[in-house]
Length: 403
Image (cartoon, rainbow, N blue to C red):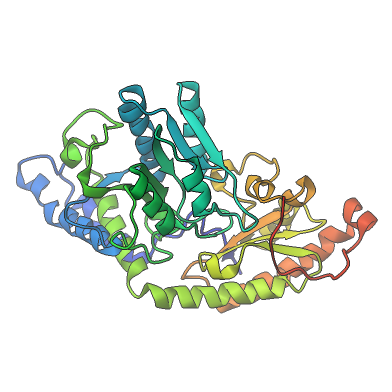
């Protein structure tokens, strides 16, 4: 059996999405900016895809949704353009983010610091999230932007985006959220939550890689990241990627239709897997499962190196990860676990398991069996675990690691 449990890194493309995009490679292939029928033939399908994204997010007609290549591009666009518009060419100098953002946000903020921006990296609490009142306390009259993820790619923890958005609205500060791990997994209603900018990526909800979007509230000004043609109303240059736009529309429609039912099914499998793994001694799961995306577990097993665990799982054709795929070549301790107060040894033991709507009950049972065997084998050869031994009390449920 092969079991894929790395769905926070990427997802399989839904066969229905593949079917929807297929005609736009060899049948309806004209450049949509062309005036002849080969170009205009794709216009209805592009319009349909745009409508599907608007409906999925409950966006208003006055808002813009601009297709990009991925959420990394969307995140870079917001951060760099706000820096240019309000800091370089304005009277602001300050950006607020968190210590646990995706590398596409953190690395961009570091780059902007080198260009003169002042960036505050907010700490997270023992649950791995930033509390709204902390955000409020750091906003000044020089703050140009607050950029905080909707849900963590590593822990699945859901941030208090509604409260943070309201604070930013009251303070007159722009608010951006990286919504990659939220869109298509939990309800995202942009009439209920105030965000100025929202990034998303289709390959996180069973669409293809290479297509994302940026939501812009009230079509407000934001200088382009890419210059060239007048595509997307001049906001994002580059020939429209028609098959992938169609695919994203179909994927987000499939992901958000009856989303509560999908969440319940995924959560039941996730909880069964989590409960079984927590029966092992000295295991820790980060965050209250009630405030996590329904598909995610970040578990640490004392005495078991994360990379060793991945090796054993991979031998049994189980795909998991030690955290963000965009940082997976860096074998340092898990930065999220360090941020919530784990010691360095424990922070090296984190394993992320992330399910999808295609995960089966049989795959969960197979994973429980082979995960348990891997823990037993790796602990039997662990010098540190053999020396210290199990901690008193054995089982540890969803943990709060304190500073």
